[in-house]
Length: 233
Image (cartoon, rainbow, N blue to C red; front, side):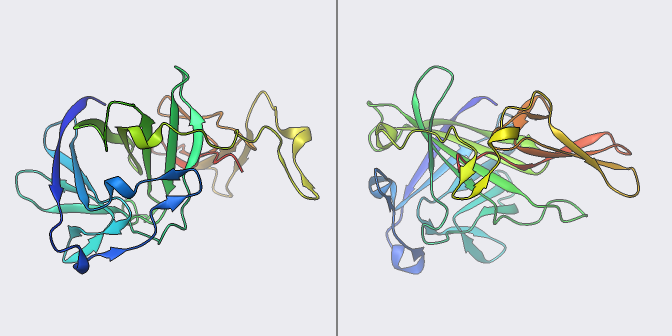
């Protein structure tokens, strides 16, 4: 994925959009609400339009929180996320350089491919104290066929969140004994054409060179799909 210039559009008639809360305890996107953030993918052909905390991005006559579209024809390829009034909560973590970041893992996008597999969309808000309310450059693109990702630098992300969960336990339900497995749990379907991998409470299943909590590998077609990422419980 390459850095691309953003197009930012302020909504004058936001009353036509589905708007909701933009606050999750320590983290909020109130200053970013009312903008459409557009990111051009490295191919130069496609772009992602994202309207934080509201459904305003247009796709096939309907409004969504995020969409992917052809920059030249204006035709929407598919919608990436619907605004769910804050039900999807951001997860706090540090990147490999120790920078604070908050990630939304949306799983309410349009179905993926002819088999209508689940499609995901990750929005990563990364701490940048100088980016108020957010930077005019970002990263976006396809992680794989059924997962898109967008990274935005913003001062809003420069707040501490709860520490990532290190235990694999919820009340009386405890997976601690299998938390640190060196290899994923695997399962083949009855046809032998699909292989599932799952790593409890962590991202260690590999798909297209990236790590996920669960993946599906199609042995007949030789490709894989990401099924979930660990959201720190």
